[in-house]
Length: 61
Image (cartoon, rainbow, N blue to C red; front, side, top):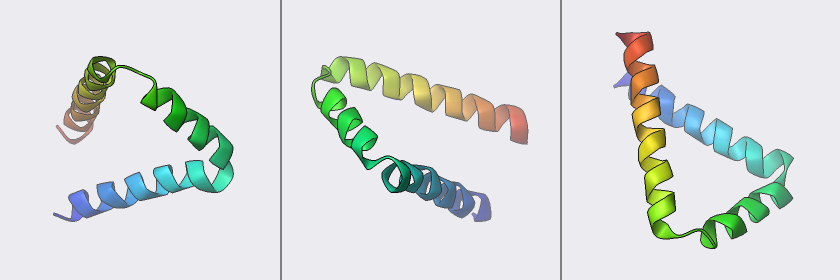
């Protein structure tokens, strides 16, 4: 459970850095995402989930 909370905290840190350091870039990324078809976003989201799970599996074994 501690690992889950630490992981969630890291997500907040990484997401917060974008908005703290480059808010204009964040807005541009949101506009680009809103113009992207849902199937493309879903595909890349699934790829990110698989890649993240693979990284955790490789590191935590």
